[in-house]
Length: 637
Image (cartoon, rainbow, N blue to C red; front, side, top):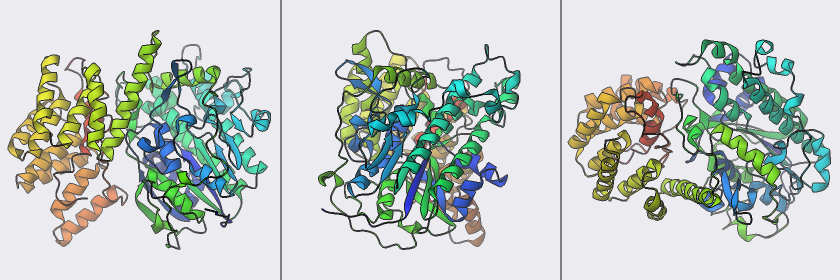
C-alpha cells in the first residue's frame, strides 16, 4: 500500500500527565492560563475518559497506538530484563505494535517525539526522537547512546539539558514565594521541586530544538511534571487537608497551581514556535483529585499512587480543521490516534480500539479503514536491539518510581523480584481484559495468581469480582467467605462482592440489608450510596433511591453513575424535573454518561490494619468500583 504525504497542516500534540479540569477552570477564571484559554475558545474541548488501570506507561502507549494494553504489550512500570535476570524500567522494546509516529514516518511525514513514556531506546523515525530516559542522567554522568535518534545528535541535545543544580532559589520562588526561608537540610521539598523543574525545562528545550531543526509535520511531547508535582504537593493544595501541618501548607499551597501556569507558559512558547497552520492538541491521560476526595494516606502496594487519579482527563484541540467553541463528549484515550490519522488523511485500522472524534471536524467525512497498519511495511519499523537498556539510567529511573510509590523496593532475591513483576503485569492485564469483558481470559490469569497469592487482597478481590461478572455467583460468595474466615473478620470489599452477587441473583432485599449494615460503619462514601440507591430502585422505592443518589452527589458532584441514575428516575417529561436534569448534566460539564467497564485498583489498600481507622479512606476505592455497577441500572448506557 503506497501512501503519500497530503496534509500540509502541522499537528502539535502536548501531553500533560494528570492535568485536571478543576484546577484548570479555577486558573482560567483568573486569566492565568491564556494560551490554553485561546485553544478552548478557538476549538473544541472537554473531558476524556481514562483506561484502567490508570498507569501512565500503559495509558500513554494506548494514546499513541489506539490500542489497549493487551494488544500493545506495555503492562506497568517495570519489566524483567531477561538477559540480566533483574528488573528494569519498562521500555519501548516491549511494545508490540506501531505508534502514530511510526505510521506517519512510513508515510513520509516528518515526525518528532519527545519524552514519551515509554520511548527508550529512542526509535528510528523520519525526524527526531528523544527518549523518556533523556532526563534521568545526573550532571557529570556519562552520556549514553540510544537516548536521541539520530544518535549523532545526542551531544547537540545534551547541551539543552537542565539539571537540578542549575535551578536557583529565584527559580523556585515562583512556586514557593518563601523559598529563601526554608532550611533545606531538614525540609527536602525544594530539592524535589528543583529536580522536577529541571525535568520540565529539559523536555521543553529538546522539543524546541527538534521543532527548529526539522521541517516537521507532527511533534508529540510528553511532560510528566504535573503528575509528579501533584503526587508530592497536592496534599498542600487549598483547601487545607486535615492533618497537614500549617507551616507546610503556608509554604507549599501554591506549588500545584503555579506548575499549571508554568506549563501554560511553555505551551505558549511551543505554539509561537510552531507558527501558523498548526493544529494544537493538549491532552492528559487522567485527572488528579484536588478536593475532598484526596486520600489522606496511601497503602503500601504497587501502583497505589494511582488511587489519587480521577477517571477523566483533559482534551483541548484547535486548528483550521476544527469547529470553534464546541464541547467534546464521550471521548476516550483510545480515540487520539484514530483522530490523528484523520488529520493526516490516513485510514484508521480495524484492529484499533478507538474511534475518530468526527464531531470536532468541520469536514465530517471519515477516511476509509484498513485491516491493520502492522501489515504495511516501510521505513521506521520497530527495529532495535532489546539489549540497549543501560544500567545507569535504569537504576535512576527505578529509584524515581520507588520514591513516587509506583513500585516497591526490591528484595535481594532476584527470582522473587522477577516473579513479582510477572504477577503485577498479569494483574494489570487481567484488569484490561475485564474492561473489554473478556472475563474468561482474565479469570485464567487471576486463577494462576490466586494459587500462590490468595492473601494478596487486590488479587483475590478482583478474582471474586471476575467470577461475579461471569455469573458464578455461588463460587464468588464461597470464595469471599473462605477469605473472611482466613482473615477472621469481614472486610468492606468482600461485603460489596456479596451484595453484588445477591443483586445479580435478584435478591435485592438481602443485598440492601447488607449494604445498609455497611453504611453504619462507612458514612462518607458516595459510591456506597449509589449502590444503596440502586437496590431501592430495583425494589420500586423511587423516593428512597432518589434520596441516596442525592446523598452521593453531595459528596461527589461528578459521580457519573449517581447523576445518570438520578436523571433516569426524574426525567419523565415534567418541565421542572427536566430543568433539574439539565443542571445535573452541567455539574459534569456536559459529559455524557460514559461508563468505565473495568474494575479499578479497588483493593489497593492495606485492609490488615486496625478496623478503627477513618473509613473515609475507602472512599476512592469503593467509589471507583461503583463505576462498574451499571449492569442492573435501567437504560442508562
